[in-house]
Amino acid sequence: QVQLVESGGGLVQPGESLRLSCAASGSFFSIATMGWLRQEPGKQRELVATITTGGSTNYADSAKGRFTISRDNAKNTVYLQMDSLKPEDTAVYYCNAKFLSVNYWGQGTQVTVSS
Image 1 (cartoon, helix red, strand yellow):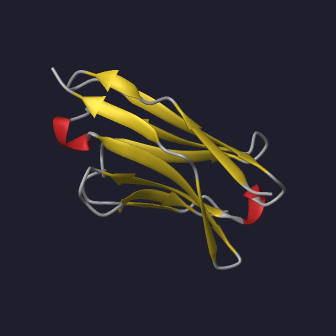
Image 2 (cartoon, one colour):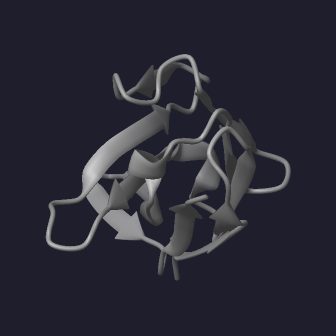
Image 3 (cartoon, rainbow, N blue to C red):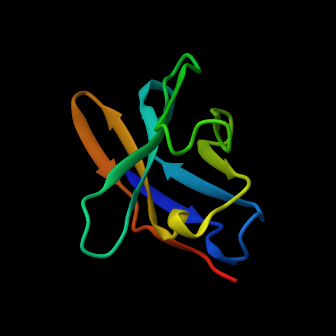
């Protein structure tokens, strides 16, 4: 059974940092492309960043230069380091695992950037 559990969200001021974590259960982690997506109320879910099994990364333009995705295969965990946060980064952030052409999702963690 695939289970993804996010943590690390919260309320921060503009310019501050947060690190999100996604702990995965199951034996799939080492063969899955992992990613983070986010969703604001009333909007579609959008890609933030992905990381392949080989460590190749891809970022949305809004995340480039500020966010860093990484993975620890020994801990079955993927991270999203978010620096220089802006109010427009406010959203629910979802962890995603994709393998064998199937997407799996976590429950989401709220990130709020506000002064």
